[in-house]
Length: 193
Image 1: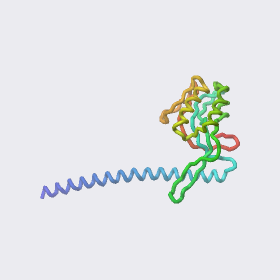
Image 2: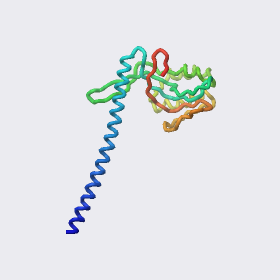
Image 3: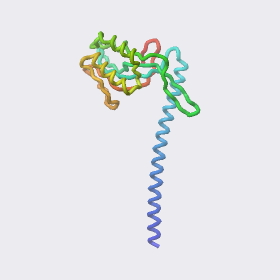
Image 4: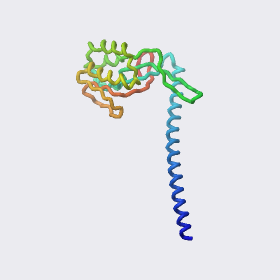
């Protein structure tokens, strides 16, 4: 009888371990599903706000987060490239898509005007390069190379940091441009976040 009890205990232990593994996988999937649902809800709220304030607000894709200290000592953390995008819904697949609009990619000239070390004679060449190549904020092939070039064109000591995981320098001595694709909302009239 003891061997039967021991066999039952081993079977119960194995069954519990199997159940526990399945439960852990299920719990991990639930966490992922909740995160997706929260993102979905947040995008729905943003879209409703953009619909309500469509005359004043727009959704933008940005890239090339510039960090530097301005002429008057203020810290900047703002994308140098921006493109207007929109939120589309596919109700049959229960999916949300961020898609392009017919607008061109913009170089943030207002941002550049705040920088005291910007080599202004290179801005025209940068704008021309953008017009010719339409670097998209979410393009991972050509846009990083372009941003690396821009960092040097704007500041001979400028640096492009490709790692998304690297923390931004809160007090950079020179211009730094980080690989940080983002979505943001800005005022249409001023271009300010």
